[in-house]
Image 1 (cartoon, rainbow, N blue to C red):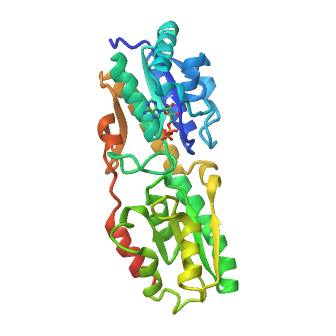
Image 2 (cartoon, helix red, strand yellow; image 1 turned 135 degrees about the vertical axis):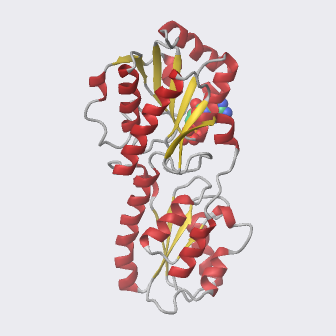
Length: 326
Ligand code: ADP
C-alpha cells in the first residue's frame, strides 16, 4: 500500500486551456485509487494562506470543456523565499497532505523542485503552458488550443491583409520560445515566422524580405514570437518602417486571447492522460518528476531536466515553412 493517503492539487503561473481537464483527471484518478484530494486555490499562494478545500468527484464535474482553471492561479513571490515555503510546508502538514500535484509552466516546476528538495517532499508536476517550452515532453497542455486560436485569428487577419495589400506582423505568445510562432505560421499559411531560437544565427527579417516573399502575392503575414530577442512585432515593424519603407505595415498583438477558449480534443486527451499518469507516478513512488509525452507514450521527466534544458525547435519545420511560402 502506498503511504500517500491524501494529495493536494494546484494550478500556478500562467493559465492554459486544458488545466481543468487535468484537475479533473488527477482528482478522479486519485479517488479511484483510494486517495483523498484537496484542492488548493491560487497556486502556491493558497498553500501559504490556507485556501484549501476537500475535493470529491463532483467538484470536477462539468469542467473538462472549460478554459482557465477552476482552482484559479496566481503568481506568488512569497513562495520564492525560504520563509514563505516554510509557511507552506507547515500548512501542508496541518492539512495532512502527503504529496502535491502541481500544474503549470517553467516557474511552477522550478518552485516545486526547490520545495521538494528543501523538505524531501513528493511532488509530481504536469506541464500546463501554452508556450510548449518544457523539455522532455513533445507537447504541453494548452499548446494545441492556443495554436488553433492563433490559426483562426490569422485566417481573419488575412482577409483584411489581402483586401489592402498589406504586410502584417502578428505577435504571438511563447515566452522566448518560437513553437507557437513557427507552427502557427505553418498552420495558417503565413509567409514567415520570426523566432528567438534562430535570432542569433541570422537576420530573419532581412532574409524574409530578400526572399521576395511579396513578389507573387498581394498580402503577407509574418508571425513574430514575443521576446526581447526578436523585438516582438512592434520592434520588427519599426525596423521595416525605416529599412523597407515601401511596405504598408500593420501590427496585431494577439495577447491574452491566446490563453482562453475551450480546450481542443487533443488538449483534453493530453490533460486526461497526464492527470492519470501523475497519480500512477505517486503510486509507483516516483518523486519530483514531470509527466511528459514522447511519441505518444507517457514518460516521467526529472524536474531538473524539464526546466534546465532548452527545448529545441524542430528545424525541419523551418524548412517546410520556407518552401511552402514561395
Ligand atoms: P509559469 O509556471 O507559468 O512559468 P511563473 O514563472 O509565474 O509561471 O511561476 C509561477 C509561480 O511559481 C511563481 O509565482 C512562484 O510562486 C513559483 N516560482 C517560480 N520560480 C520560483 C523559484 N525560483 N523559487 C520558488 N518558487 C518559484
